[in-house]
Image (cartoon, rainbow, N blue to C red; front, side, top):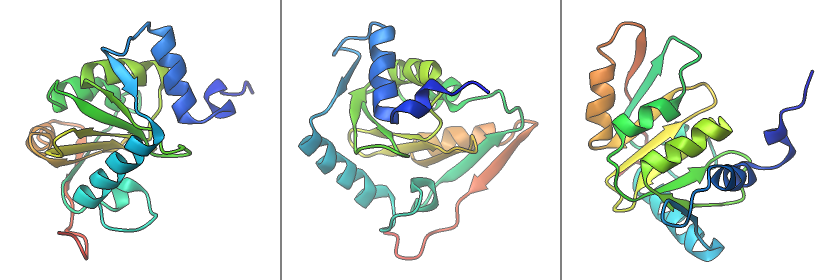
Length: 171
């Protein structure tokens, strides 16, 4: 069995390599300095998640989940439809080192298609919405227009998901 090259390093490095391979410039996507990244990550967690160390998708205060029965489907395909193409923060959320990248969802979708990373989050820089994909290819969304757009998709054949139960301690 051939080793997955993404397993040799963390998702932050896979993202950096994808940025280079796709010839994306700082106009498209930019890695934030560690201190700024920590502040942003904390603000997103305080806005959308209950405190704790569980997976981000398990800690969402409110929102909607969505999955499609075709396992070849990936969240990177949905990003341009679900997320307004306005500045966003992009976080690897598993085996990461606290990295945060800034860019538009269309550029982030290209990076995800290249890396096939499936544990990530995108958040609007104004904290209006959050989108998470987990390792089960389930998309979770909180805030508008993400929740409305996911709710539309739930009406399609072969789709599943629904509103999340409010979390204890959520605001």
